[in-house]
Length: 276
Image 1 (tube, one colour):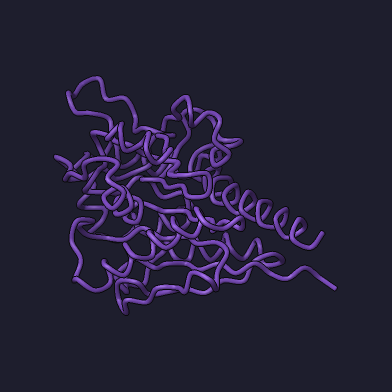
Image 2: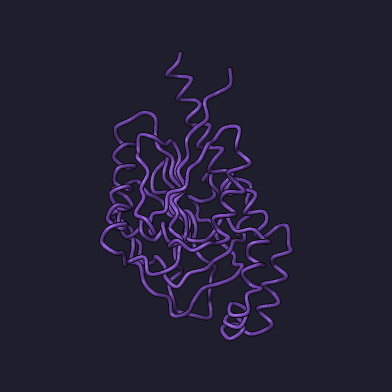
């Protein structure tokens, strides 16, 4: 008799729009079909939130828009979901595993009071380096990734000014920062946080693959916007970075699989202890 599959909920924060990001996440999840069954919840479109007891693992996606705004329904339900996961993990030996991506990461930072969410002076978009902190060097999420490693960044907002007392209170750790920009005075944004042993988040998009990002860049309005922001030379560099196997392809093949492998291992070990 085979092992019972673990149940995973994908919280779709893409605002109901068809998108490449969800395709990428599904592609990664399909690699784990022997261990995981999953269901997608339309958080922003239909205010759907998974029942905490029914799922073992959660991935909460990126999405467009201002992380400080909601409609008074889905956002409040989402914040309640974050509290439920946190409280569950404080009171049960079988922990819920949660990965927060981009928009979800920003909302969680706001909810837990870990930093300031501010609008950037300009959009950050492209294939960027992400730098591990000292804590990030030891974090299992980044295992087998270089320092720095490469990822797709796409955001108008950022998390800055970490609240050190709140980090200490919750036991949270900053595990990644954005690239060093010595030519500007701006503070480096937080790119990854280990909220707890079982909850982790990234500001960048670890699900992005070269195919999806190239499809996005081929849209005339996107291409024109990037060239207007960064110039043709940087646009060409962005395209070159896409075909480098050591860049976003490696992050796509490594980071979310690391999260899933760690989650499965933790949950399976607990299952064995419960049965023995």
